[in-house]
Length: 266
Length: 284
Image: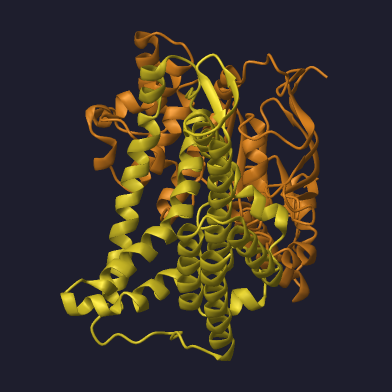
């Protein structure tokens, strides 16, 4: 039941995109997301879509797998489309009761829809090709300048990677405890909302206890290995830009330039 | 047959359904559990034994195949699976981690109350169950979290036993216990079978745990049942068992080596007590 939920959904494969430095991918994704929102011309979207498809092919992640990532936002997508379609003023082309569909509305809905889809697919592509550990590692590196402002960058990154690491463990634990209580005759489905919420107490209490126990064990294990925070800490696999990363940055700059040119001139 | 309790019929189950090449956790598993039997279910980590026991009370639905409890298909749409879970009691691995109540008593009545027993009967059943697992009655008002590890586990077992199951399935009940706690617990389980006629399925990866008590041993490897026979017959396959990452009981090795060294001992012996008698007999 609960096993089906995927978070931090890394797709194991050996591809150029997988091998890129996580910082490159993070910066690239952010730049890509921004590029989607500067201009609204159809040609820009076409370029963005082509760019995404090219990266997708390079990443060797199956397309069907990518589409799965769209499922959870399907509702938001449809909702946005309808709202945009119905509540944009302009030239009315179709009207029924109090609802008017306008040319501007259709355009707005179309560009919003494409944006959302590209946005989700683009960020999914990053999480699919980068392990959570490498991603937080990249964030730590990119946030380094904030250290000057006394932001505990290393600690934040460490907290994030621990949290990410524990999500699958706690999901599995939840599954186990739920099954154990089902074996004792628990019923999580019938009854009204209050009864249902109450039926989860036998799951939540052991889950919290186990989370605290794990946190305690982990803290102990870290202390035993002399962990003392970020100061002077070296890394097992230090991030290092390679040739392919410079190539990727070049492609990225060319893409952004193309977007700006298309957006301004056409 | 009259005494048949539970029939597993060609069970197939796979965890990761998105990949057809993934290994099956259960691959065509069939067996029959008879009333009053003590079955040891043995397998290496990942052999599918925990997956199998979660089928026995319908916590997992197989991809194909089915299970019949007293003649009824437990995966039928209208089958009362909640009642089934009272009859086929399943004690999970490390069951002490599922405790949640403030007192031992309310912990143990959770199961029976869920089964629809009224509070008074449930409390009687709870007192009874606590006695049967060998806990002191004084602990009944204590918080289960104040008890020792071994006692917590007994509380968890009592909470299943209080539902008055006909089949009791225990998944690695001795994991993480000290030697004394281990033999006490195994003794307790044996008594449940002998005194009350409860059918027992004991899951373990240690042959020594089950060798003594089990009437029958099922050996699993890679989701399949490899052997299903009386202990002595199963332990004849020492080499095959070792290939699966298992081992025969210590006594089998000892007696085998003694025989190799020229002593006329009977190598079918598996328990410490019988082995001692046999060795003394041969030596005198």
